[in-house]
Image (cartoon, rainbow, N blue to C red):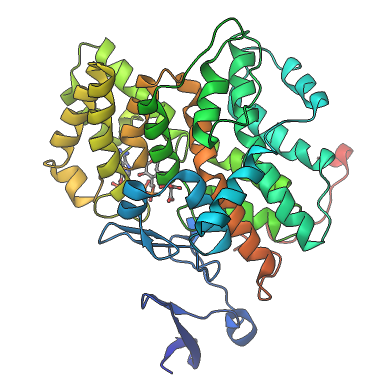
Length: 424
Ligand code: SDX
């Protein structure tokens, strides 16, 4: 097996190489400090592998994304979100019987304990729903304590997948002062969520099929993305053997940031600002290239994709289809397309390999569906939940897992004696 040689202060060290199933190469530094006394330094972990995983494969140069080996384009076209949840968590596509049984389990675990409704009342209507999602996710551990019994862990996985959408819908209803709409056992996962979001007790509401299809696609596209910020957070918290609810709650918090899942909200706010400012997108392109402007083109750029983000390509096409089917002509979509066209021809973006990411077009579709902007990142979390769970489960079942505890390079004061306050 090839090795990597390192020469440090006149000494030569050898480290084994690790090669993945797609021939990615890593230098195994698990013994680096023990052998050399030095640590590696990689702020933001852009060059550091934290684990081995069988769940999602991304090739950033070729714009490839696969869940458990299945190309995202095929899953987006032919699968359903519930089936993708099963695939990610169980590492296999379900048979018809397995899928029906899984769907039924999800259906029969959608209700929250009635006492949990008090949580929503304790927030001001203006509370950002991501705060409610994170707080309520960890609170599930108070109602369903995780025992180490694998059967309970599997049941809690179903509970979390089933109840997360109810929490999201209740948070939305709370924010608009409407009554909660209970889940319905006769509706599928996505349709049931949209029904809880948009139905009112005073009249029957049938979810338009175009909305169910569009949301199912969005959830599939967001379901996992290997070791991104929020997933790494879930693994970090879970590595201390904190329970799954606590680990996912931490992931929700990490996702909230505008550089990560919060970008879909930031994109729409950016497009609205440009629209309000007369649609002068060239002005904002120039600002995005000016470091001193403090302005970034939200929805553009990615740590891994240095070519197109396959999800953005699928969503751009879906945005056209959904808006056309709904008869909506959204000026923000035209601004988004113009920004993309200019950026793809501009040396600043081309040199830095900045392309639209998953967040650039998703908000256009959420908006057309009638979902309010501050719920966009909640939708991202709803989609990412099976990925967080699958990664958490893989980490917990991996005998090689150790508590995550990075090192540092200390740059503070060297040793000095304490000085009593009267002598300072
Ligand atoms: C997601 O990791 C994942 O997989 C995430 C995700 C998932 O599914 O989990 O794909 C979801 O989070 C998508 C990303 C959403 N965030 C945004 O759209 C926010 C805007 N994008 C950026 O802030 C940025 O591109 C990041 C955060 C996405 C990536 O940041 P990096 O890899 O740390 O890149 P960087 O900030 O070091 O930028 C490199 C260069 C810099 O210029 P120079 O210093 O080299 O001159 O590119 C510039 C940056 O200034 N740059 C941008 C830019 N993004 C990077 N300039 C203008 N507009 C941008 N959007």
